Image 1: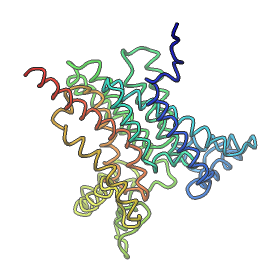
Image 2 (image 1 turned 180 degrees about the vertical axis):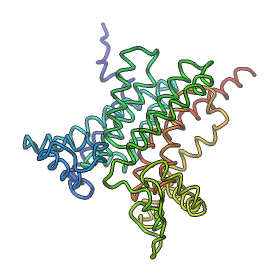
Image 3 (image 1 turned 120 degrees about the vertical axis):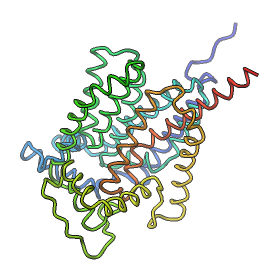
Image 4 (image 1 turned 30 degrees about the vertical axis):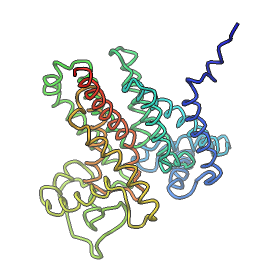
Length: 384
């Protein structure tokens, strides 16, 4: 009598095990190489956590949108737990997000090898997963984004339970990083297009006034929360990269309305359009172009080849992009578009972290583009 091999060690699972080994090796390597990174940007979160423990409030309103990380740090300080606890938590949540990413691709492509290659390609982007050892907000935000996307794409019908989960997860994203707000309009479009495809245009048209009013309120609430947010400054000294002035003498621009508001941004665009247009094009070029003059040659080659390959796959199948998975495509594009618009209006991040936050969106768009093109080719062969 022959016995079947263990379900875990079954040959069919070897590719999954290989991905797990690669992921585990990477995390061990990151910890060995970096340790716990509690300096740089982490310092302000640690200081804010100490302030929160002393006063019970944040020093400025903008820290509400980073409160997940701040409260975790405060928890460790209060109970005198080593910050390694947070790093291990970030690594574990990252592991869950990798599993979710694999499942998203497998559900979309119905092909385990496409899912395996896509997840492998996701894993080899060293700079994205490196944040697991940093006490920054990126690691949790990146992972939560993928986990939320997996849940949303798996929803088969709108129920009270699903609605509550979506609502709570959107709040979690919003208070982990302020760009979590972009998931709200993306989710709104996804749900309408997926569950009401025939009436989607009418529903969006009718509800757009209320949706835009809600977004207007939320964006202004975020922009006007104080602290580091200053949307006039990048225009005064023509910043392409946040914190880096490109001119020696700053412009003198006065705004008659609150500068950190949609009205303030609109005033800059309408009254200083040439300046806005010039800066926005340079910022978008830096955002999508990836490379930086201050990076090493290897770094620039690696990140450029990595992202340009994704761009090419998406563009190669652009005609078939909306053939299937329309709701998913609009969700992904909306997230990317809002991030790009934010960069155009303000500045790009020194280490490409704004682009990294939507890396899973680009990868999933590439998967859908490739898969739809493959299905069309296969359908043509079957027809002939």
